[in-house]
Image (cartoon, rainbow, N blue to C red):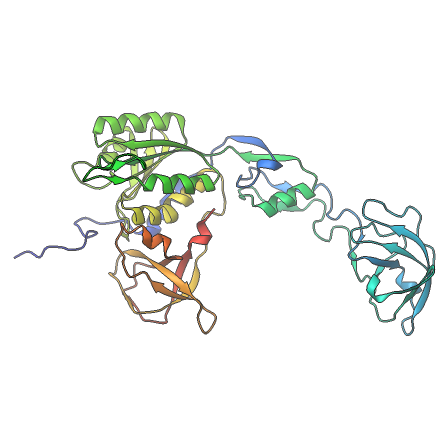
Length: 418
């Protein structure tokens, strides 16, 4: 008697390995050519189309790092206190115009231009002032408390490379060079669908046999955070003609189309057939868990990503496959998330030949290495497991078992939060 399978990921036919799929994504996803000017105010999340090169040094001049007194080191007695007349003042934005004369000191403030002839600054807390005289203790090194011109950035240096996704601190760096705008790739236009007659919009009536659509809103939120121009195209009914027409219309006005559901082999799974009728699939069955039915291809010349319908499988495949390819299409250079090493709290078993991701929560370890506690329920439809975990343990195809306390790769959600 034939044995029935209780593994929804087991079926006949060879599945593609995750690393082979990643190689296809890297090879076929090239940045879009459109480039536009972008201002500083809306720069976060934009992807540089060209290097940012410093036209001037930062800081542009030597300046004081503290409030205090600027002097020439040559005037100091190395073994006893030095008395110097206070003859000038330099504040930020109001430099001292005359050069510092021998055996004199100038009152300076943080960020102020160093007076010509001064090379060292005493902190005001270390100086005793008597009338117009500064009494300076011995022992300070030459150049102390002075920021040199170009200490942060030298003129001509490349400070940010093309393909970099801008963060708040990057925008500040560009502003510090005096730029008001820069060239960035145009925002990637992404169309998002959910598929399935069982789906209902949140807030609508949900009769027996129906569920509220969560996947689309997860995708919309994730894509918004990536800085794309996102179109919410709603729920596709399980009709082949409707699916084909909707996908064709989306491809005509977007750079990429992403769907969830409809990618398996059932009678009501029409997305795969619709894509193949108008383009091609480069892969659609991967040796992974969760999320075997995940697809990448072209649809009328535009990128297509078909994700599973189960919420957890959809999220995992989005993070590990869809997110990198979309970022690459958008022009980003660094698209692969960084994994960290953690210890497992318990033994873990898995099937060889497929890559698996396990939801886990981290707790502090006694040796400083976090310990990953696997979420007790691992169904691909348990959305709460994503909310109550900190990230994903990643086990490669060759792993069969992991003993408690072993080091494993871990993808924290914070790494892919934006």
